Image (cartoon, rainbow, N blue to C red; front, side, top):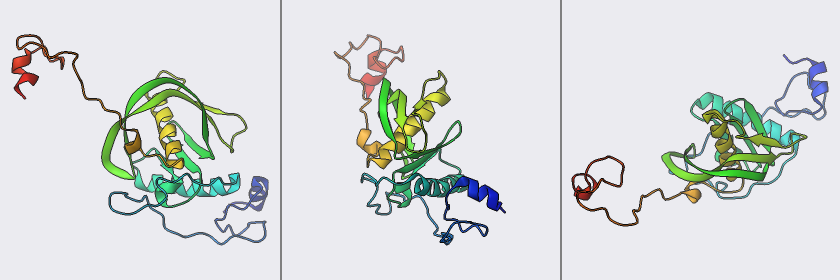
Length: 211
């Protein structure tokens, strides 16, 4: 059980119904069962809506629920409030470490890149999107801005893309709205005996020319 001293130091009621909560009125624990809405099977009126701004206290309470859902599922690295039917500009990311984004706004973007993304709201429907390697994000729950993707590893890039993905959700954007066409179009059709443009090193007539 959390101590009264700890709860007092935290400075607000989390809404989970702690027995020792020193704040009045004590909030009733919210036992609402939330799940990620599969937009292929169910209607989610919030998935393409710009979500409302919230206080840091409310955002942290919602973030706790989002982390619980991610932990229970075990198949995602980020989640936004509208994916579970909550109208609140709150998202969580857990790539390198757990991060809460309350009322986030991207204020700087660098180095455009392509990335193949999936989404829990649209299972088994990944697509290529245009993202940025480095983004700087302004959030209400941190005193200074957060920068993602500044490192050189794949994990750094993954975290940066995940942050951009979740902030898109909060602004009513889906990966399906950011699909990038990756179809190769040659400037001219290669000759039948020339190397195929697909990079297979096989003659065009025996490779793509047969399709």
